[in-house]
Length: 168
Image 1 (cartoon, rainbow, N blue to C red):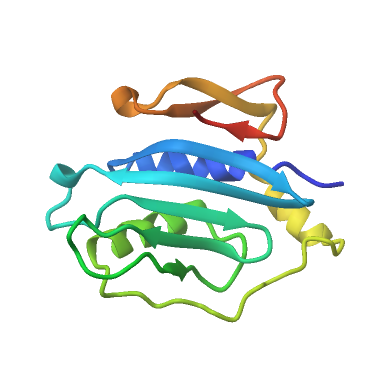
Image 2: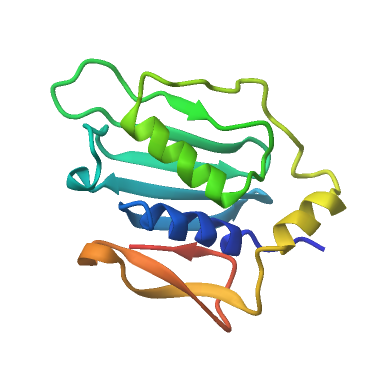
């Protein structure tokens, strides 16, 4: 049985916001049978001791795991290049949030794991489903009221709703 990934994504989102990162758009979808998610991040620059990079997007899919793509501030040379996270497709949400903060505040530290994919979403993988199910705690996730700053949705636990969760 395939388990929904929205609760795992929500836990990462919650931990990012606890670190003064505004998450304005969240999507947890399934495209071609592959579960994936995108979070758009806007660091609250005043909350960080040093300069932080411009807006960023954090993406996850069940084959490649997490990647962070930063968009440099206007006028800065260079384009957006994704940096991939870790040794597994399903790292602990606390670890993901800490990794994002480090990369946003120290973009020169860009270790990237390039030997993905870690798994094939078409292959039956009971251990992956078990690990993903540990984030499901009674119910599905559905859009809630506007997020911090009123710029986007947050997610709250509740009944109903489908696996496709998308902000405006």
